[in-house]
Every structure is written in C-alpha cells, then in structure tokens.
Length: 377
Ligand SMILES: [Zn+2]
Image 1 (cartoon, rainbow, N blue to C red):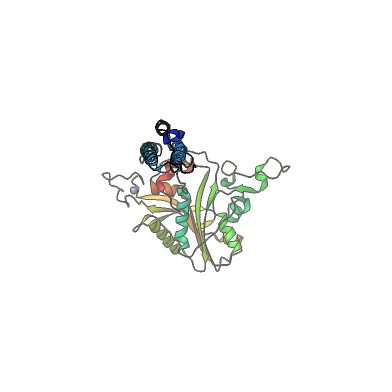
Image 2 (cartoon, rainbow, N blue to C red):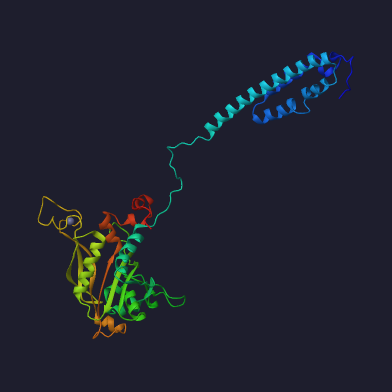
C-alpha cells in the first residue's frame, strides 16, 4: 500500500482509473453469467470478490489517496463492488433454482411403483399347516417325535406287522435305497427304504421312550407315484400314537373329534368305517363331516356339494388300536398296555381346507400359489 500523498492523482493510479474499475466490474459480471453451476459460481466469486480479487486490491489503494480523490475513488469502487455483489446474488439465486428443479425431477419418487421390489419370502403352507396340526396335539400334552426318512425296512414294515410278502413291500410301491458299492444292483437287498409312511416313528418311539407314550410324528414320506393332480411321490403325513394303560377306541374317537373341531371349527365330527391295516387291530377308515355342507347335501339335489360330492363326509386317513403284535415287537406288554394310532396326509387335508384342486400346485414352488397364505410363521 502506498503512503499518503497530498499530490496523488487517483487517475494516475492504474488500478483506480474509472475504465479499469468498469473493466473489473464487467469481468466479474461476465464470469458470474458464464458460471454454469454453483461450483463454477463459487470459483468466480472467489476470483472476483475474494481478498486478492482485482477490486479488493484496488480498494486497498484508496487509503493512500488525498481526501477528495479518496471520496471519488471510493464511490467508484463501492458502486462497482455493489454491482458485483448484486450480480452474484442474482446468479446464485438462478443457479439454486435450477438445481432445485433438477433435483425434483431426478430424485422424484413415483409412489405408484411397487414399494418393495424384493418380495419377502414366506413359509410353505404345507409346513405351517403341518405345524398347526401338530400344535393341536402338543396342546393336549403330546410330544413331537421324528425319525429318519431313509428308514430300515424293519421299522417301515416288519415292526408294523407287514408280512414278508405284503404287496406294499414291492418295488412298484416303495423306493428301495441301493446299498454300498459292491453290494450288488438289487436295491431291495440293502434293507433300507425311503419310508412309505410316518408309522415307523411309532416303533422308534415305543422302543426309545418310557411308557406311557403320547407322540405326534409329522414328516415327509415317499411312494413310487407319478406326479399328477392327485398324487405326488413325496408327500407329508402326520401320525399320532398313544400307548397307555386302559386306552380304548372311545379315546381315539374323542381325540379325532377334537382334532377336526380344532382345525375346521365347532360342530365338526368324525366317523369310523371298518378297514384293515397290518399295524392296527381293529382298524378303521376315518372320515370327517364335510365342513362345507355339514352333511346337508346328502339326498338333497337342490343343494349339491362339490367338496364332498354330496356324500356329507370326507375321507381323511386311517386309524385303529395298535396291533398287539406291534406292541410285542417293540417290547411293550399288550396284556397291560393298549394304544391307538392314526395317520393322514397333510396335502389332502390342506386341499380340502383351502379348496386346492391340483396337488401339483403344492409342489411346484410358484409364489403365486403360496402368497395368499401370507407370512404365517
Ligand atoms: Zn359337502
């Protein structure tokens, strides 16, 4: 900065000449106008209004001028700086408005789009329904028992009183598991099958637990069926076994009625029809009242029922009193203990309960089928 000098002529100070001040001002205005975004404007602001900008440097020269010259120069510089400040603020406003408008477009949220592009999964209705059935019995004090799916032929058939020539043992009905290498190509020689029912868990429970035994056994079973609307080679059963002193078929019947009432509502009941199974004696086929027409469609052509084909009853599964030969095979004294058992297919029950017409829907894994069942866990 120059020292005060009475004879100083501001017009002679290069930086304070009017045309120089105008040039500095116009350069600043041009730079602001040329700034394409807020970043460029910030750079222009630093260059033209900062501490080392031409106008700031010119401003410093003013202090060294004589009073009159100081006033003139101060007015010129002041006006120029004010004009620069206004231009800066105006351009700043324009660029901020542009940025806000752009952000509104670029970051717009379309509230009509699906809110979640990754749909959440859900458990399969077979799983949740099987657990729901099991829960009915757990609430009555039963324990859940499980067994292997690759099962010893002895547990799957022999312990359950299937004779060696029983047709169920044939390879057109049962998957036999091939033995270790070198054991030959005869699968049936391995003595291992994919269990054809959950009943072998009965034998395992009797052999492995203290009496009395109250168990419910849900699980996957296998048969050599082709997949079609009413068959699948892999399906699910739930099996019940109670062995105690003094159990009768009345206990079985009451338990079955309680189960269908728990699953299908009050007023439901079951009926038993004589049948034959190797592992129960006497044995019965279990039907439940049609939960749609409650039997009202029987003999009433005006009110046909598709669910039960107007028969009033729906076949559910097999049951009976545990065959004493099974008790003996499992080390239980049939003179002191008796028991009942029943089992049914989960797929079939789920089909009735939800009007599912094709069994393939349950195994193909299409979320359009499972989604209506919701996120039940
Ligand atoms: Zn019906």
